[in-house]
Length: 461
Image (tube, rainbow, N blue to C red):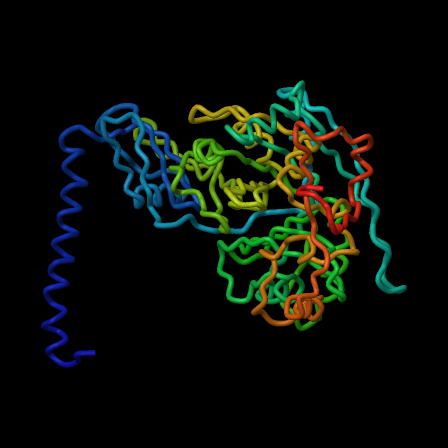
């Protein structure tokens, strides 16, 4: 804004100051090496997260480049080792977000083998019927067959509930559905299909959203994450086929959108110590995890791993893991825990590392049955259970999944009218009997029951 020589004169002191600062930083980078504080043999791991962890082994390195170009990235990230045993270097202000590699050919059998051998997992086969074709000329989809981990060893539901309140719970929900949308119109397209707002969303945004039919009744409650160039939709096990069919039918030739349904390793980590355990497993500082409502991509296991031994830098391969802070529990408030998604090859090692614990935290393992108990206690509705085509998201208490200032989406007219006219006539509640409550002869009979408040009823009746 100053222009002419005045602008040049005003900018000159800043440029001089910048050069002086660079010189000081270079001096501090060189001096520790001169005094023998550098580490020639170190194991360092960094990746899309932009973070690096190294452990020193000895002094005075003679580094030379070898292997892949990620070794150069390692040096650029300022690998500075001190006499401390472990040094963490934050190379970016926020976690980076990349795309996850999902494939229709993903095989989770190795994950199941590891869970059975190491944690005495008991499995159960489930079949989810394919929806009927929307049009007569459309092909019939195949039924969805999954193998789920029902429970692990002798772990009880009481142990899982206690760990969720005081420690950490690791659950395998890989039987859930995963849809991946790619293309330049992916975020705009998904914005027109669900209740939450994704126009203007940036990579790293992750939000719960409901998918509804044309009269605003709930089909599914899902977690939608905007990744690098793709959109990941984590849906309920029984609704993967329905959502795929509905979305696929609405993609026009002019839309730059591709849709894929693929199996994926899908874990949930909840509890007050969940963050510490996850950060330890991924070898990053706890502040490096994404905040609530965000997602990020981290490297795990083999890469990019850079090993520096006897002056030789060897780079490994990339294995990315997507972490979403949310999508678990805590609809009633509090921390919702973490959703962790990985491609098939990374799943066994990732599960074993999380289950082994870290930072003084050993998680309690939860199968599908125990996770269902946590879900009910936390008041999170599920399709086929509390969420049916008889109810809309507002009646189910899912106001936080609905944006009232976005453009059109399927079911919007009905939901907007309910809000403006005060037309929400029923509401979903969870019932928690007190210790002195009379026993309920048939608790299952209450599931899905409709209750009314009648004149003269006492408190809690």
